[in-house]
Length: 376
Image (tube, rainbow, N blue to C red; front, side, top):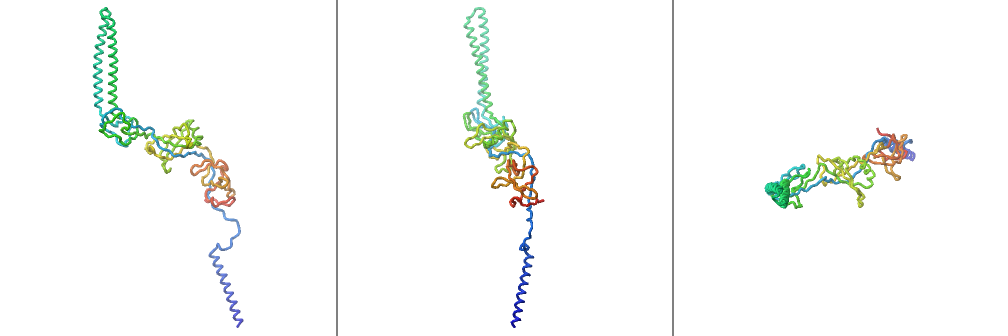
Protein backbone atom coordinates (compact mmCIF):
# COMPACT_ATOMS: atom_id res chain seq x y z
CA UNK A 1 0.00 0.00 0.00
CA UNK A 2 2.73 2.43 0.97
CA UNK A 3 4.78 1.37 -2.03
CA UNK A 4 1.99 2.17 -4.43
CA UNK A 5 1.52 5.65 -2.90
CA UNK A 6 5.24 6.37 -3.20
CA UNK A 7 5.20 5.32 -6.88
CA UNK A 8 2.24 7.60 -7.62
CA UNK A 9 4.00 10.60 -5.95
CA UNK A 10 7.20 10.02 -7.93
CA UNK A 11 5.20 9.77 -11.11
CA UNK A 12 3.42 13.08 -10.32
CA UNK A 13 6.74 14.88 -9.67
CA UNK A 14 8.20 13.60 -12.94
CA UNK A 15 5.13 14.69 -14.89
CA UNK A 16 5.20 18.21 -13.33
CA UNK A 17 8.91 18.57 -14.13
CA UNK A 18 8.35 17.54 -17.72
CA UNK A 19 5.48 20.01 -18.02
CA UNK A 20 7.61 22.88 -16.65
CA UNK A 21 10.46 22.12 -19.04
CA UNK A 22 8.05 22.01 -21.97
CA UNK A 23 6.53 25.35 -20.97
CA UNK A 24 9.97 26.91 -20.73
CA UNK A 25 10.85 25.66 -24.21
CA UNK A 26 7.60 27.07 -25.64
CA UNK A 27 8.12 30.51 -23.92
CA UNK A 28 11.67 30.72 -25.18
CA UNK A 29 10.61 29.94 -28.72
CA UNK A 30 7.88 32.55 -28.62
CA UNK A 31 9.99 35.23 -26.89
CA UNK A 32 13.50 35.20 -28.31
CA UNK A 33 14.43 38.27 -26.22
CA UNK A 34 14.09 36.16 -23.13
CA UNK A 35 16.84 33.86 -24.38
CA UNK A 36 20.36 34.51 -23.08
CA UNK A 37 22.26 37.19 -25.09
CA UNK A 38 24.94 35.98 -27.38
CA UNK A 39 28.40 37.18 -26.75
CA UNK A 40 30.13 39.36 -29.39
CA UNK A 41 30.57 43.00 -30.74
CA UNK A 42 27.48 45.37 -30.67
CA UNK A 43 25.73 46.17 -33.95
CA UNK A 44 26.84 49.36 -35.79
CA UNK A 45 24.43 52.31 -35.59
CA UNK A 46 23.03 53.50 -38.93
CA UNK A 47 23.77 57.17 -39.63
CA UNK A 48 23.54 59.71 -42.45
CA UNK A 49 26.67 61.57 -43.50
CA UNK A 50 27.87 64.49 -45.60
CA UNK A 51 31.24 65.42 -47.06
CA UNK A 52 33.08 68.56 -46.00
CA UNK A 53 33.50 70.80 -49.04
CA UNK A 54 34.75 74.24 -49.95
CA UNK A 55 32.34 76.80 -51.34
CA UNK A 56 31.55 80.52 -51.27
CA UNK A 57 29.49 81.60 -48.27
CA UNK A 58 27.42 84.82 -48.39
CA UNK A 59 27.46 87.07 -45.33
CA UNK A 60 23.90 88.25 -44.83
CA UNK A 61 22.71 90.73 -42.22
CA UNK A 62 19.07 90.83 -41.17
CA UNK A 63 17.16 93.82 -39.85
CA UNK A 64 13.69 95.31 -39.52
CA UNK A 65 13.03 98.21 -41.88
CA UNK A 66 10.35 100.74 -42.73
CA UNK A 67 9.37 101.71 -46.25
CA UNK A 68 9.70 105.44 -46.93
CA UNK A 69 8.73 107.41 -50.02
CA UNK A 70 11.59 109.18 -51.76
CA UNK A 71 9.44 112.31 -52.09
CA UNK A 72 6.14 113.31 -50.49
CA UNK A 73 4.53 116.54 -51.68
CA UNK A 74 1.44 118.30 -50.37
CA UNK A 75 -0.10 120.05 -53.38
CA UNK A 76 -1.23 123.54 -52.37
CA UNK A 77 -2.78 126.31 -54.48
CA UNK A 78 -0.42 129.15 -55.39
CA UNK A 79 -3.19 131.68 -56.07
CA UNK A 80 -6.46 132.56 -54.39
CA UNK A 81 -9.73 131.66 -56.05
CA UNK A 82 -12.65 129.29 -56.36
CA UNK A 83 -11.80 125.66 -57.09
CA UNK A 84 -13.70 124.90 -60.27
CA UNK A 85 -12.68 121.32 -61.06
CA UNK A 86 -10.94 118.40 -59.34
CA UNK A 87 -9.69 116.12 -62.09
CA UNK A 88 -7.70 113.41 -60.29
CA UNK A 89 -9.14 110.27 -58.73
CA UNK A 90 -8.18 109.27 -55.22
CA UNK A 91 -5.45 106.65 -55.30
CA UNK A 92 -4.62 107.39 -58.92
CA UNK A 93 -1.04 107.19 -60.17
CA UNK A 94 -0.10 110.48 -61.84
CA UNK A 95 2.93 111.67 -63.78
CA UNK A 96 4.75 114.91 -63.29
CA UNK A 97 2.90 117.72 -65.08
CA UNK A 98 -0.51 116.00 -65.12
CA UNK A 99 -3.45 118.36 -64.51
CA UNK A 100 -4.96 117.81 -61.06
CA UNK A 101 -7.40 120.70 -60.55
CA UNK A 102 -8.40 124.12 -61.89
CA UNK A 103 -9.05 127.42 -60.12
CA UNK A 104 -11.35 130.01 -61.71
CA UNK A 105 -9.02 131.73 -64.23
CA UNK A 106 -11.26 134.70 -65.11
CA UNK A 107 -9.86 137.16 -62.51
CA UNK A 108 -6.36 136.50 -63.73
CA UNK A 109 -7.43 136.85 -67.36
CA UNK A 110 -8.86 140.28 -66.53
CA UNK A 111 -5.61 141.26 -64.81
CA UNK A 112 -3.70 140.19 -67.89
CA UNK A 113 -5.85 142.28 -70.22
CA UNK A 114 -5.54 145.26 -67.91
CA UNK A 115 -1.75 144.96 -67.82
CA UNK A 116 -1.63 144.65 -71.60
CA UNK A 117 -3.76 147.79 -71.99
CA UNK A 118 -1.51 149.73 -69.63
CA UNK A 119 1.50 148.59 -71.62
CA UNK A 120 -0.05 149.84 -74.89
CA UNK A 121 -0.84 153.20 -73.29
CA UNK A 122 2.68 153.64 -71.95
CA UNK A 123 4.17 152.60 -75.27
CA UNK A 124 2.19 155.38 -77.00
CA UNK A 125 3.35 157.92 -74.43
CA UNK A 126 6.94 156.78 -74.86
CA UNK A 127 6.70 157.18 -78.65
CA UNK A 128 5.34 160.71 -78.22
CA UNK A 129 8.06 161.56 -75.69
CA UNK A 130 10.74 160.34 -78.04
CA UNK A 131 9.39 162.52 -80.85
CA UNK A 132 9.42 165.55 -78.54
CA UNK A 133 12.96 164.74 -77.46
CA UNK A 134 14.13 164.65 -81.09
CA UNK A 135 12.47 168.01 -81.73
CA UNK A 136 14.07 169.53 -78.63
CA UNK A 137 17.47 168.29 -79.64
CA UNK A 138 17.05 169.91 -83.08
CA UNK A 139 16.05 173.22 -81.51
CA UNK A 140 19.01 173.02 -79.17
CA UNK A 141 21.39 172.83 -82.12
CA UNK A 142 19.75 175.97 -83.47
CA UNK A 143 20.11 177.63 -80.06
CA UNK A 144 16.33 178.05 -79.97
CA UNK A 145 15.68 176.23 -76.69
CA UNK A 146 17.33 175.91 -73.31
CA UNK A 147 19.34 172.78 -72.55
CA UNK A 148 17.28 172.30 -69.40
CA UNK A 149 14.21 171.51 -71.50
CA UNK A 150 16.14 168.89 -73.41
CA UNK A 151 17.37 167.26 -70.19
CA UNK A 152 13.86 167.16 -68.76
CA UNK A 153 12.55 165.48 -71.89
CA UNK A 154 15.30 162.89 -71.77
CA UNK A 155 14.31 162.13 -68.17
CA UNK A 156 10.68 161.76 -69.22
CA UNK A 157 11.66 159.25 -71.90
CA UNK A 158 13.63 157.19 -69.39
CA UNK A 159 10.73 157.20 -66.93
CA UNK A 160 8.39 155.96 -69.61
CA UNK A 161 10.87 153.24 -70.58
CA UNK A 162 10.99 152.10 -66.95
CA UNK A 163 7.20 152.17 -66.90
CA UNK A 164 7.16 149.79 -69.83
CA UNK A 165 9.27 147.35 -67.82
CA UNK A 166 6.76 147.56 -64.95
CA UNK A 167 3.91 146.96 -67.37
CA UNK A 168 5.69 143.93 -68.81
CA UNK A 169 6.22 142.54 -65.31
CA UNK A 170 2.52 142.97 -64.60
CA UNK A 171 1.71 141.06 -67.77
CA UNK A 172 4.11 138.25 -66.81
CA UNK A 173 2.55 138.11 -63.34
CA UNK A 174 -0.94 137.82 -64.76
CA UNK A 175 0.17 135.10 -67.15
CA UNK A 176 1.89 133.28 -64.29
CA UNK A 177 -1.28 133.47 -62.21
CA UNK A 178 -3.17 132.01 -65.14
CA UNK A 179 -0.67 129.17 -65.16
CA UNK A 180 -1.06 128.70 -61.41
CA UNK A 181 -4.81 128.47 -61.90
CA UNK A 182 -4.08 125.11 -63.50
CA UNK A 183 -2.74 122.95 -60.64
CA UNK A 184 -0.43 120.22 -61.95
CA UNK A 185 1.44 117.36 -60.31
CA UNK A 186 4.93 118.44 -59.22
CA UNK A 187 6.19 114.83 -59.08
CA UNK A 188 5.16 111.42 -60.33
CA UNK A 189 3.49 109.23 -57.75
CA UNK A 190 0.28 108.06 -56.18
CA UNK A 191 -2.26 110.62 -55.00
CA UNK A 192 -3.94 110.23 -51.64
CA UNK A 193 -7.40 111.18 -50.47
CA UNK A 194 -8.88 114.47 -51.67
CA UNK A 195 -8.61 117.20 -49.04
CA UNK A 196 -10.73 119.92 -50.73
CA UNK A 197 -13.84 119.57 -52.87
CA UNK A 198 -14.70 121.55 -55.97
CA UNK A 199 -16.60 124.76 -55.28
CA UNK A 200 -14.56 125.80 -52.25
CA UNK A 201 -12.53 128.99 -52.23
CA UNK A 202 -8.86 128.14 -51.74
CA UNK A 203 -6.00 130.42 -50.79
CA UNK A 204 -2.28 130.30 -51.32
CA UNK A 205 -1.73 130.72 -47.57
CA UNK A 206 -3.69 127.56 -46.72
CA UNK A 207 -1.68 124.86 -44.94
CA UNK A 208 -4.12 122.06 -45.72
CA UNK A 209 -3.48 121.66 -49.42
CA UNK A 210 -5.53 119.88 -52.04
CA UNK A 211 -3.97 116.41 -51.99
CA UNK A 212 -0.75 114.60 -51.03
CA UNK A 213 1.33 112.88 -53.72
CA UNK A 214 3.72 110.14 -52.67
CA UNK A 215 6.49 108.93 -54.96
CA UNK A 216 6.53 105.13 -55.04
CA UNK A 217 8.80 104.49 -58.05
CA UNK A 218 11.50 104.20 -56.88
CA UNK A 219 10.96 103.82 -53.16
CA UNK A 220 13.28 103.63 -50.17
CA UNK A 221 13.58 101.40 -47.12
CA UNK A 222 15.30 102.66 -43.99
CA UNK A 223 16.62 100.05 -41.55
CA UNK A 224 19.12 99.88 -38.70
CA UNK A 225 22.13 97.65 -38.12
CA UNK A 226 24.30 97.23 -35.03
CA UNK A 227 27.38 99.42 -34.99
CA UNK A 228 29.57 96.27 -35.13
CA UNK A 229 28.21 95.63 -38.64
CA UNK A 230 29.98 98.76 -39.87
CA UNK A 231 33.24 96.82 -39.99
CA UNK A 232 31.74 94.75 -42.80
CA UNK A 233 29.45 97.25 -44.53
CA UNK A 234 31.35 100.56 -44.41
CA UNK A 235 34.51 99.51 -46.31
CA UNK A 236 32.44 98.15 -49.18
CA UNK A 237 30.28 101.28 -49.37
CA UNK A 238 33.39 103.47 -49.46
CA UNK A 239 34.77 101.50 -52.39
CA UNK A 240 31.51 101.98 -54.31
CA UNK A 241 30.49 98.33 -54.17
CA UNK A 242 26.83 97.48 -54.74
CA UNK A 243 25.30 95.83 -51.68
CA UNK A 244 22.16 93.87 -52.67
CA UNK A 245 19.17 94.08 -50.34
CA UNK A 246 16.07 91.89 -50.28
CA UNK A 247 12.83 92.98 -48.62
CA UNK A 248 10.56 90.30 -47.17
CA UNK A 249 7.09 90.49 -45.66
CA UNK A 250 6.53 90.51 -41.90
CA UNK A 251 6.58 86.71 -41.74
CA UNK A 252 9.92 86.63 -43.58
CA UNK A 253 8.62 83.96 -45.98
CA UNK A 254 7.79 86.01 -49.09
CA UNK A 255 10.30 88.21 -50.86
CA UNK A 256 8.64 91.44 -51.93
CA UNK A 257 11.40 93.29 -53.77
CA UNK A 258 15.13 93.46 -54.41
CA UNK A 259 17.23 96.61 -54.32
CA UNK A 260 20.58 97.97 -53.19
CA UNK A 261 22.07 100.16 -50.49
CA UNK A 262 22.21 103.89 -51.28
CA UNK A 263 23.95 105.30 -48.22
CA UNK A 264 24.12 105.21 -44.45
CA UNK A 265 23.64 107.84 -41.78
CA UNK A 266 26.53 110.05 -40.68
CA UNK A 267 26.36 109.08 -37.01
CA UNK A 268 25.51 106.21 -34.68
CA UNK A 269 22.48 106.43 -32.43
CA UNK A 270 24.06 106.28 -28.98
CA UNK A 271 20.80 105.26 -27.30
CA UNK A 272 20.52 102.07 -29.35
CA UNK A 273 24.05 101.51 -30.66
CA UNK A 274 22.76 101.24 -34.22
CA UNK A 275 23.26 103.07 -37.50
CA UNK A 276 20.54 103.84 -40.06
CA UNK A 277 20.97 102.62 -43.64
CA UNK A 278 18.87 103.54 -46.68
CA UNK A 279 18.25 101.16 -49.58
CA UNK A 280 16.44 101.91 -52.84
CA UNK A 281 14.02 99.64 -54.72
CA UNK A 282 12.55 100.08 -58.23
CA UNK A 283 9.14 98.98 -56.93
CA UNK A 284 7.65 98.81 -60.42
CA UNK A 285 5.02 96.35 -59.23
CA UNK A 286 4.21 98.55 -56.20
CA UNK A 287 4.81 95.65 -53.81
CA UNK A 288 6.27 98.07 -51.25
CA UNK A 289 3.95 100.61 -49.67
CA UNK A 290 5.03 103.74 -47.75
CA UNK A 291 5.23 103.25 -43.96
CA UNK A 292 5.14 99.44 -44.40
CA UNK A 293 7.29 97.30 -42.08
CA UNK A 294 9.50 94.76 -43.86
CA UNK A 295 12.25 92.31 -42.98
CA UNK A 296 15.56 93.13 -44.63
CA UNK A 297 18.37 90.82 -45.72
CA UNK A 298 21.54 92.64 -46.69
CA UNK A 299 24.24 90.77 -48.59
CA UNK A 300 27.20 92.45 -46.90
CA UNK A 301 30.01 90.25 -48.23
CA UNK A 302 30.91 86.86 -49.69
CA UNK A 303 33.54 84.64 -48.08
CA UNK A 304 35.43 82.69 -50.70
CA UNK A 305 36.32 78.96 -50.50
CA UNK A 306 35.06 78.33 -46.97
CA UNK A 307 34.86 74.83 -45.44
CA UNK A 308 31.14 74.10 -45.24
CA UNK A 309 29.09 71.37 -43.53
CA UNK A 310 25.35 70.98 -42.98
CA UNK A 311 24.32 73.02 -39.95
CA UNK A 312 22.63 69.97 -38.38
CA UNK A 313 26.03 68.29 -38.09
CA UNK A 314 27.24 70.89 -35.58
CA UNK A 315 26.46 70.03 -31.97
CA UNK A 316 26.97 71.98 -28.76
CA UNK A 317 28.65 70.46 -25.75
CA UNK A 318 30.03 71.65 -22.41
CA UNK A 319 33.32 72.53 -24.12
CA UNK A 320 31.79 74.18 -27.17
CA UNK A 321 30.84 73.16 -30.68
CA UNK A 322 31.80 69.75 -32.08
CA UNK A 323 30.95 67.35 -34.89
CA UNK A 324 31.16 63.58 -35.29
CA UNK A 325 33.58 62.48 -37.98
CA UNK A 326 33.71 58.95 -39.35
CA UNK A 327 37.13 57.32 -39.04
CA UNK A 328 37.67 53.59 -39.63
CA UNK A 329 33.96 52.89 -39.30
CA UNK A 330 33.67 54.70 -35.96
CA UNK A 331 32.21 58.03 -34.86
CA UNK A 332 34.95 60.30 -33.55
CA UNK A 333 34.06 63.50 -31.72
CA UNK A 334 36.02 66.49 -33.03
CA UNK A 335 35.81 70.05 -31.64
CA UNK A 336 35.33 72.77 -34.26
CA UNK A 337 35.19 76.55 -34.52
CA UNK A 338 32.06 77.68 -36.34
CA UNK A 339 32.18 80.73 -38.58
CA UNK A 340 29.15 81.94 -40.52
CA UNK A 341 25.88 80.02 -40.39
CA UNK A 342 23.92 80.65 -43.59
CA UNK A 343 20.58 78.89 -43.71
CA UNK A 344 21.22 75.14 -43.59
CA UNK A 345 24.99 75.49 -44.01
CA UNK A 346 27.67 76.28 -41.46
CA UNK A 347 31.17 77.46 -42.28
CA UNK A 348 33.89 75.81 -40.20
CA UNK A 349 36.85 78.05 -39.42
CA UNK A 350 38.88 75.40 -37.58
CA UNK A 351 38.75 71.68 -36.85
CA UNK A 352 37.94 70.07 -40.22
CA UNK A 353 39.62 69.49 -43.57
CA UNK A 354 38.36 68.96 -47.09
CA UNK A 355 37.28 65.37 -47.57
CA UNK A 356 36.24 64.69 -43.96
CA UNK A 357 32.92 62.91 -43.56
CA UNK A 358 30.62 64.26 -40.85
CA UNK A 359 27.52 62.64 -39.43
CA UNK A 360 24.29 64.58 -39.99
CA UNK A 361 21.57 62.22 -38.73
CA UNK A 362 21.42 59.89 -35.75
CA UNK A 363 23.78 62.10 -33.73
CA UNK A 364 21.65 61.88 -30.58
CA UNK A 365 22.54 58.17 -30.16
CA UNK A 366 26.26 58.53 -30.73
CA UNK A 367 29.19 58.62 -28.39
CA UNK A 368 32.87 58.93 -29.07
CA UNK A 369 34.32 55.77 -30.62
CA UNK A 370 31.07 53.93 -31.30
CA UNK A 371 30.79 51.83 -34.48
CA UNK A 372 28.57 53.31 -37.17
CA UNK A 373 27.23 52.26 -40.53
CA UNK A 374 26.39 54.71 -43.30
CA UNK A 375 22.80 54.43 -44.51
CA UNK A 376 22.46 54.03 -48.24
